[in-house]
Length: 173
Image 1 (spheres, rainbow, N blue to C red):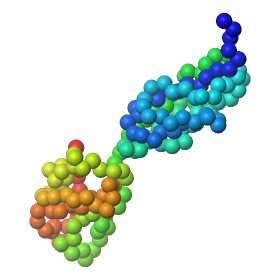
Image 2 (image 1 turned 90 degrees about the horizontal axis):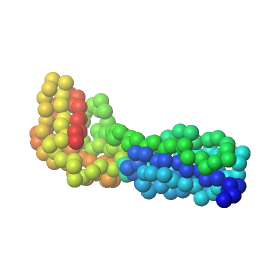
Image 3 (image 1 turned 90 degrees about the vertical axis):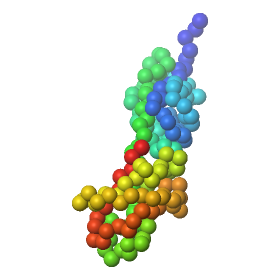
C-alpha cells in the first residue's frame, strides 16, 4: 500500500458540556457537538503548517475551551496529538438593581439580579437563595420570579429588609 501524500489533523475534545463550539485550522472549520476525536476535512501535505484555534466558545452552559499542541508542521504522518479542553465558566452576577451600596432605596424595592448566563429555573428555588446581613440577620426569600431575560431574576423577601443594612446574596445548588 503506498504511503498517502497528505495527512489529517485530528483533535480530541474533552469536557464539552455546552453547544456551539467551533474549531478552525487554516481555511477548514468544524462545529463540535460532542466530546471525542474530531478530524478536519482538509488534509495537509508533509511539511505544511497547521494551527488549530477555537473560533467560537460553547454556551449553554458558557464554557472556555483551550487548545494544546495546536500548531506545528505535518511530518509524514497524521497529526493526532491536538487536544481541546473545555471547562464550564462560573456563574457570576453582572448587575444588581438597586446598585450595590445604593442609598435612599425604598424598602419595598424587589432586588433584581442579572447573571452571566441563563439560569436553570427548575433548580433555582427560594430555599437555595439567602440574603444575610453582616449582623447575621437572615431575610427569608419567599419567591423568585423571572426577570426580563433568561439570565435575570427578581428576589422577593418574606419581610422588608432592614434600613441602612448591606446584605449578601448567596445562591447554592
